[in-house]
Image (cartoon, rainbow, N blue to C red):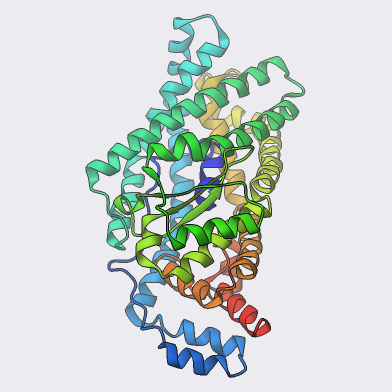
Length: 438
């Protein structure tokens, strides 16, 4: 679900930080090692005893110690700093484009090519996106390639990473050309009511992405194939039917060419629903873990989280537009007007607009993470009830510790975590197990 969600807010974040080469994935210099699972006899003996959720959670937590635990914490904590560096880097890029008058020159170039205002905006955006991607390439190269290899999850060569970056850049150019051409048209057509119309258009565009992403965008990066007939496919489809999910096929995709991370999703709206899991999940985990993961992903669908995210982030987007409207005159008078930006409807002011939006998004990071974390918690509970695999869910949570800190502090989790912490997820599974003993 998070993969789809990331595509859904791609436009939102790319404008805010001025554009980035799409990230790959990461984890730790060697795959995180977890000590052996207790044998079946020990598990049967334990099942006859009352379960203390706290003690049972600590048993799982203690299996990830030493260097592996340190790598997990280091990766997560480094990501906190990268939030700041991406924010500051985006501001520098925006300042450079405005102060050097490069943005104004691109606007003037577009105006010389056509008198049509909408086409002028499109031409400007088609220059702006690759230019910003080039300017942000050094940070993207470190963050999304070298750091990924440093922590041991990326399987991409530099050439393949750049190739995927080019594909992502093409997608971004197409999406942003469409969205920003429409946005600036609304600024010109409705100088007083543009915020209302832009919010409505943003909601529709985000919903369109949720429908299009699994069918048209995801296959640009991975090959999707039907999961062969067998017990696993039958179990997944049975789980889907039992929970009212209208899908009769299960797909798997070749994420292992890019990363060692495990993932799955049940995505799409209005007839585009697709159940998919990556080959890492198939090859690295047990049937109980796969079932637990798929039930979690189905929880997102059943709880209608795609619509929930659309509504929530539409409201957040409206807040960002309010922030821009309230701060534009101040920012333009200090940075834009002297550089040749005419007004808020001038595409040459896009870097300044992006900088203001990035300030807003940076400040509300705890809110956006809380929205996502709440949905993930709800999906966790649904998955436990649907799959009835608490140990499988706890096992897969340990695997996710390759790149997610297991036991953050409460403030740390509130600010930085878009999923519940590993400790809270395992504790939730053990609590469910204690309350559902046969």
